[in-house]
Amino acid sequence: MSEPATAPEEITIPEDWEPMPIDPNYTAPGFRLLKYCGVTLNNVHLQWGITKSLEQFQGRRSDVIVASFPKSGTTWLQEVVWRVTHHQPTAGEKGPKTCLEYRFPVLESQPQEKLMDMVSLSDMTDQRFIKTHLHYHILPESVKTSGAKVLYVHRDARDVCVSFYHFSRMLNIYKYRGSFADFRDNFMRGEIVHGPYREHVQGYLEHSDTVLCLTYEQMHQDRGSVVRKVADFLGVSLSDADVDDIVKNTSFEVMKANPDTNFRQWEDSGLVSGTEEGTFMRKGVVGDWRNYFTEEESEAFLKWRNEEVAPLN
Ligand code: A3P
Image 1 (cartoon, protein in one colour):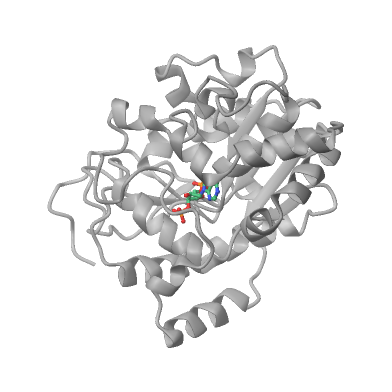
Image 2: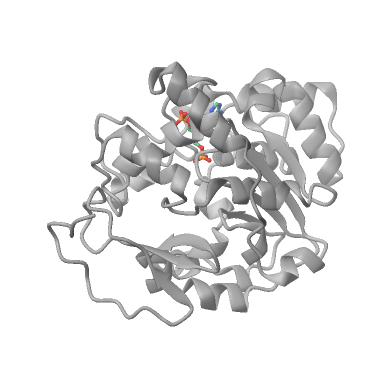
């Protein structure tokens, strides 16, 4: 791989972090992939002090954590969880007024949240709702021992790859400009942020005795039963009418029209650009991979997806 046109900003890479080959397809100045505990992260994670955030984080019994590999349906599950736990029959389409990011701070982005003038996780006194893309094996130990409730969503890896490709083009801290084929190859090699993918999913599925594991496809097929499962897991009792209301108000159309779930503030803050990729809520379908993979490519990808992998701990 050749060097990018823009020289990366000088960063000191600590001993326990490993530099990865520079991928010139990421054209945002200074962007580079780094490995930490077997996981692909990036310079922004390092610069924002992710290791300190992880060390300082203290899980609480009342915490509710939505975990996923990026682009697997995280936002959708977050909104379901929020509405299940804050259900008001009269909320209607407007629902909660605050941007999802403020309702669900990101475990690995605490310093960023300070920049956004958010209360840090450690200072929050109410029940905490937290989002994370971290692999299970690098979650702070207290998440696993505190009795916090962890929910995990995963999705057909081909659709995750397509969705992540578009998102990587939208994000101004990545500005990915390579082809889909390049992105897919990197995805399979684990050279994408939060990779390697298979180990991420496996790490959570191995703990499905304590983690509620759901799929994007299940949510598509029967959101009512997913809403009930989430409610049972979180110990919330809902009437049939409540469930119907939550199902209606977590549809793709409603969430796309809602700036708080379509992350419109990311456009205002310059984190994403209004490009041909559209908005955060892109297509919201099962099987968009068919527009990107040939039959043979899909077969090879699935063969790779189904290979056994060693756990990353
Ligand atoms: P697409 O890019 O395939 O459209 P995440 O929240 O993990 O980043 O996942 C984003 C993906 O979930 C995007 O997929 C987005 O459109 C989809 N999504 C978000 N909310 C959804 C909903 N209510 N119904 C269906 N898909 C949804």
